[in-house]
Length: 306
Figure (tube, rainbow, N blue to C red):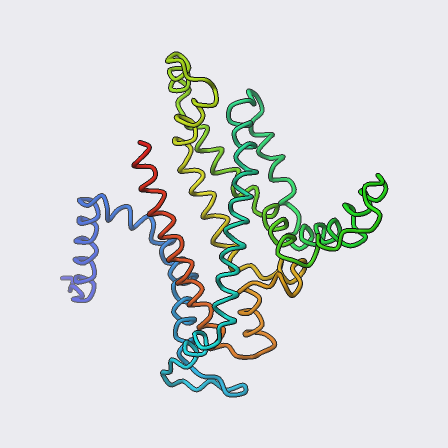
């Protein structure tokens, strides 16, 4: 006679019920397949965010954390206008980077989607080739190109177009915008290309058959149908560039500083992690609000042109 272990029986019963529930529910089967990814996102994204949010309510004295709830760091953020000024300056610069990048990326994506008939994969690979190198190397390359004795100034002087090198090319917001636009170009080209590639070509032929010229066909058919790719490209460029601190440090100079540089200094030289965490939280909330307004506006715009 064999005796049954109560614990084993209970575990088998739970396993059997869960399996039957998974077989009945399609959504639960999907979540079970996503469970490793969800766990990685929880550990890699949610936990650091929780730690950052908790840290923002602490106070730091020298090298010690005072683990008592306090809103002092948030009060410091609002009482010192420099933080808010630099935050909105960063948003303006990132918005300009987004516009420039999308305007440069759209023609390239359009050309690959509609003009290239063969070897489109080769073209896409060629677009990403510069991004196989280090991000820092590409930033330093732009620093060399935009420098006082850099490639652009030397080339213009050799052509006789300049008598003295241009000083405004480097260490200002313009150089930051140029460098960031190049650094994130591929991330804008690819989603726009995918959106353009999915457009049914018969719709374009129908527009031409109805008497539309190529420009109006683009405005009324191609552009509206490619807006999802444009929106995705805008978000992929805008969100990361707001918090960028490497590019402003190398090519921005004092006038090109962004909010990421303030946060980096708080976690670095200033040794004030709680204040840095509070500035990070406020930056993320502001960016979230801006993105939400952007998505709301684009949604209403798409409804109007539909």
